[in-house]
Image 1: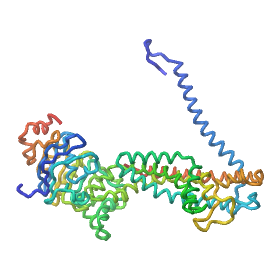
Image 2: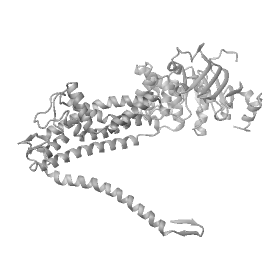
Image 3: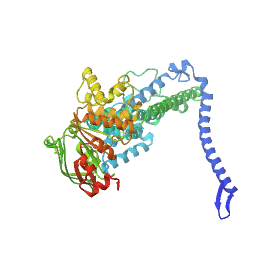
Image 4: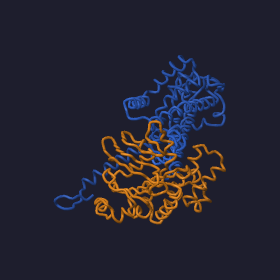
Length: 295
Length: 253
């Protein structure tokens, strides 16, 4: 680097060195991060891949969960996450529409925003206890897909609200003006112009939040997940097995913890692969929507 | 011009928060004519334009005194629905702003939401509007292509066609050619000349030649006041007020 000082332009070796040290340290930090992710994935893949086969994915556990597969847990997790999205998406988008399009800055709106941020910061086990107290006991849903979905829905709600609000706010004002100037009402403008344009952003945020919901253990262990079942659920009032809880059970609460190690790794591999695929889906959605954006 | 005005501005004062943007403005707009509003940036001409179809309602902390009479009724009366006002008084914006939809859907959007459901009827509205905006021949084979693929000039004519589809009485144009090249600008100006047979056009422009070319009457605004309002020829050949003369001869602005 060349620096100007009273002696004119002289090369400052010290500055070069400082810059290099800084560069190496940020580079190392980035590398470390990638390394941690690769290490976790690698460890799980190496230990888990052996357990993965068709039978593992399509049959229920057998012989005190030391044999057989994890099919009921995969199905349960699928139901719970879809349920959570079904609960949180309409509510979250509605709240985002209010905040982005209608709310005028005032103390009430500020209070709502603070509450949403608080909701995002609540530990998941607290959600689990809330779900137990409110949905399972007070509303009498029992430990069920319904109660678990509602609880997971509460967890992903703030993420969906923030993502949707951002997406709605990024819709150019000129689109709204164009529609309003044609004598179209505000609500119709939101329905027909704003939401379709914001949709890909809303979906990206929602899919990412689903990835989080799929991996949560604490909120479902009191509200939906069952220790063991070979039955698939028949209604939303049935208990289900779920992948994260199944992993927890196999690793801590079973009778034959050591014997089920391969199954544990297998289940973990299935779970993170699911979440990984969901996140890839969100990324593809984002790339796709950026490509189609031309304003 | 002894005709009954189609829309009249009566003693309008307008405030953004504490800023006095329009000061006691009164003027009449004649039907089937083109009126140009000129003046330096910030003089209030766009503000006035956006008052005429209640687009300023979207902004917080505004205050209006006075009346804007359209068809014998003050459009700011409490009982008046701004949505209905905007159906009759359309608007074209500075930057072409087609919806990210197909060309067809850009035009059919508003009529459809206003109750035209018959597809033959919609087809007819789309074709008629595009023909009126002299865009039909260029797009008739690509009606299902995204409007975003059109050139800037075509997009602006599409926006005009979109406004025409609602069959308004008045079309407000807010510097409609300021983002366009000279050829596209010429096309829009020709179009304006054509449209005044059926519509009343009020256009805000920074381009004085444009005002001189397309308008029948011109109003000159300065610092929120209407300085001079007269037949365009008169404004540009023998303005009565010194400020108008200074502005149109390029001494300030």
